[in-house]
Image 1 (spheres, rainbow, N blue to C red):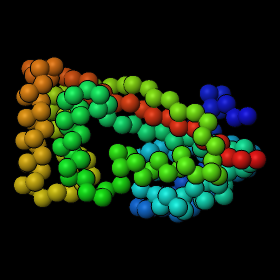
Image 2 (cartoon, one colour):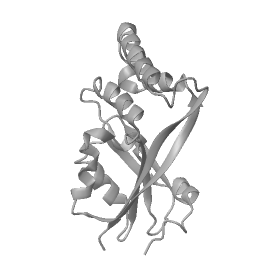
Image 3 (cartoon, one colour):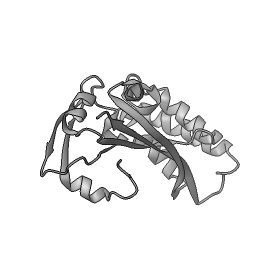
Length: 188
């Protein structure tokens, strides 16, 4: 059985190449035979894949008893000001692929994979207080808005900051996130 703690990530990264396009895995090419090695893929692009085609392509390159680890970060909406921040952004998301839509979780129901484990790890990203607005404006669907709409988002986020006693007057803050790790195995 594969032990994710004992396998070095750089070995995996040097063994495979994942070429992702906007809505699908285009190709996964092995540079050398890595035996039954895992395929790691972060959330950064997984939520953009075609969920009907991506698992088939992943399974094509995984050998029997291979493993897939999906790793991503989510804002920790248990913190009230972060939940308010997320609600602002969510109002502009439309049908943009993203974690909160739940669509990327279809792999949990895919009988071709065995869900082995999931674990959450809290962490925070230190940033200046102004980084909260920067974070909002750097979100893809917010950055694509006209300047006037971006100004509205900026004002809404500034209002959240001004109303949160834990943020008022701070030079630096810790933006809370949860790193999600989901490990899947393939069938023999």
